[in-house]
Image (tube, rainbow, N blue to C red):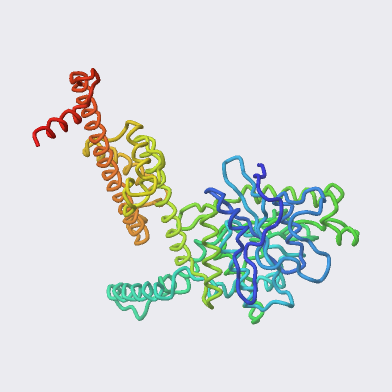
Length: 520
């Protein structure tokens, strides 16, 4: 793996200004340069638990105690505000590009639970691997620190409310029809209904990232009944519901169930305390890794291997995202929160598709223009840029442009030949559009795709009209030049045969004028 050339610094991705979430231009500019496939590793956890330090090592931002990377503090104040992006993506050998996002610590005294839920939700929605950082052990208290998961269905929607109601209504009708075939049925189970809670969890889990629980300062032996277990099994054991009848136990069991439901792909990594000396711990980001406990170094290496091995491309509806698409998602989710709404995955995805389709139209038109300019030897592809632009010979310098096109020798052609070459370029442009926008048949029939394809076809029709117009003007100019040349040759021939009394030679026009004068 290797870091890609970019900015070796943390960039604000989503910050809060005057109570509104702001998506920062510099981070978006970085993302827009990253092609698909793109993986996103984010980290979250309680404030002052060392998230940023851990992410610095995972991203390669600070591996030798150089004090760089995401800001790490040793005071009681939180360092990271909002979501921050490390400016050096990592390119893996398989072609996958990985970016890293640090998040504001949860549970600080300066934040409300709603704000914590929003930060938590944004990190989940943008990630393909979500790292949860905690300290100690995975016990009841650690689970309660993850209580935000209980209200995720309130803070993240898969569909808009209108769409959800329509699906629920349709499912209700289907359920009633199914009931009519079940003799003696007094009622049906709604657990799997499209509008029911079970289905809602299934839908969210399909959009959620992989999950890695990192337990810092771990002191227990990994054993179960005297048998050694690994980190993953430790997590699975901790997520098993506990037999108890107290409300506290019921609440914790609910968190266990939701964690298991939301994160189908999950793992765990335990890390011992990096050092025993308090001064070293307070200045950890400036201490070379080799000076920390060997067990911590080994654990950190294992964690890094696990993270890169389990990192997958960020995808929505089966389509791998580019950096530009991720930026559109971030902007759409932030706008939803600013309007007092809830991030809705389907709405954000529609915005991504709309943006990508519009960009694909521009690229397809550029391909057409460059191909036409090369084939027809046009001085500038912009000659084809606008259907309603003035004719070249009406523009300032347009006559010179037309002369340059004619002198290049490719035009004029028969109109049938112009149309045939146009159709070839149209096929190439539409193929490029399809490759950029369509990943399955369903997208071919989407409203966004149809609208943008209609715009592409309209623009390509304008290109043909423009080409035919330029071709006609080249034909007129060539005919004019041919007529001028013929007249000049005719006049030269006559001039050679007409001699004046003084022995000179006159033009045919002069001789004709003189003869007409005598007739008068």
